[in-house]
Image (cartoon, rainbow, N blue to C red; front, side, top):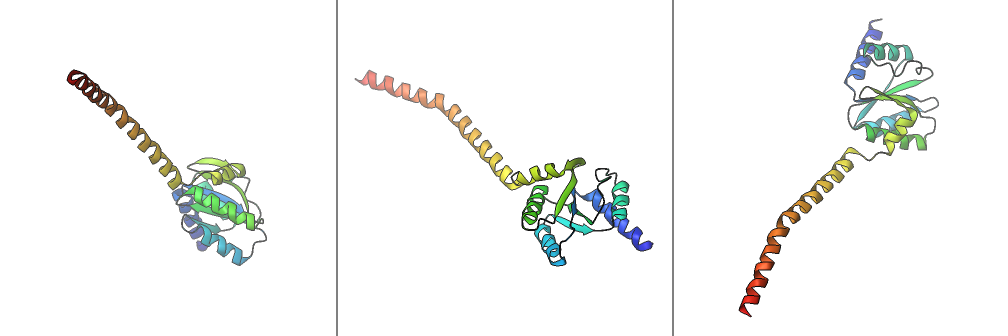
Length: 169
């Protein structure tokens, strides 16, 4: 009994502290395949296998209702503590090689996600790529602004030079 309570407390903490939580079904996957999946996502997430009743109690304790009615069969949770897009990509790539892994649904920053939403999340570019693109846009805007500020000054210099050349001639 105390072991179950400790497990529920640990899972509740994971639900509360994660930026995203994804529900998967792993029926038919080998222990070695699950180890590989854990390695693939270890940088940004943890993969936790637990009894559905314990997962359900922990989700309820954390105020997460997105998994109500979805906890059946061999279920495992992906608790994301880093980049959710990278984790979704890793799950998608793993599922291509191991079609027995099924992503059922999830929660991202408190908002429920369907399985299709998780697929769309996997199709997004990573945070680093999006930040690099934004930096490029800002840099281009700064160069445009600098050109606009310098254009009247350089035009005035060219006009003065033309007048000077006309006066000397």
